Image (tube, rainbow over all chains, first blue to last red; front, side, top):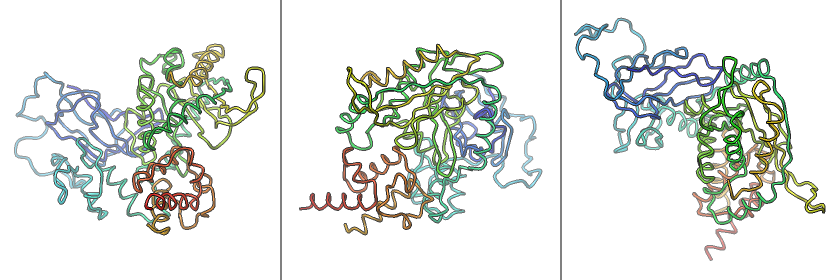
Length: 396
Length: 85
């Protein structure tokens, strides 16, 4: 038997509010399934389970705010014997009277998935249905993102944000920007207090990289085109595999290298927010796959729908200014990570190529490293490797 | 499709990207990237949406022609016209 607990979605999170269950007792879940939705300072986050098995009991009511680590449900692993069915310890048979008139949706939960009226075959969770009713949203107009296309609470929230709010007020409802600012402040203050940063910068000629991208994108429809930001993430991920001292966590006075490369992607949110969810196994992905995951991740982050594992486990972060902004940025490491790589905007500069000055596209790449784990020497080799990879896009 | 319809479609798609912006108040000759603060990913989303809604596959080399609302409307109008006749 395993308890499924309120996860910590970053160093700064203390508690979360459970707003939706996507499973009910008796349901089978596999590793990575989204089982619940939790509201946090970073928005509505879809919580996944790491434990495959059967949901035995739901332990937390909807709309309860509970601290990190609180058991939310019990999951019985495959092959484990079922708990003795009769004699539940707390509820004697035939005791239906609820002790207190708390919120209406209490245990036992209704089946979370039902069929939406007017949309045959579309499954809708009860919380999503309630929200849709409250806000007068036609469920037939909502696209589901849950298991098998089921419509979940964030889907309806998002739809509401899109369709119903007056244009000047519209914003993804799962995002609470003032709360997010508090979370950023806590994490960054801790970083500056605890992590002795060192900073390196490297200017790289990416003319060839841009030409390669232009040629490739000319053959592709818009939804398959690549951005240079995807190449930057892949280059960092590959380099991190070769320099494991930059990929992992500093905890309890020592560095633990991470077995996989999950690149945190710093994503600016309109109105002044920032989140860095993980692109999992970025070193293993083809550029096309990485780009499509990045698009999805940015879109979900900006609408306040990040998954729990994406919030909690980036092993190294990339912050990219894109085509606007300035030439260089020096990031602050997100604890407990030990490195952040910054990409400035690509600019045209006079550059010496084969002994002659020519206009070239140049990007400034920076590394902020944790001096408790690495030194400038190792950092320089790591940063140079990233620059070299950016110049060989066909190998990314 | 009239200019007004095209403008409405483009404004809707830009509003999906920048929901808080009142598109009616945006200068149609201003660079959208500055005027409504959109990045390269947002711009690609905009181009992709035009592809899906209007069936126009805008090549990357033409992106600079679409960075203002007026420019985008002129580009799309010309494209639709040339494909009709």
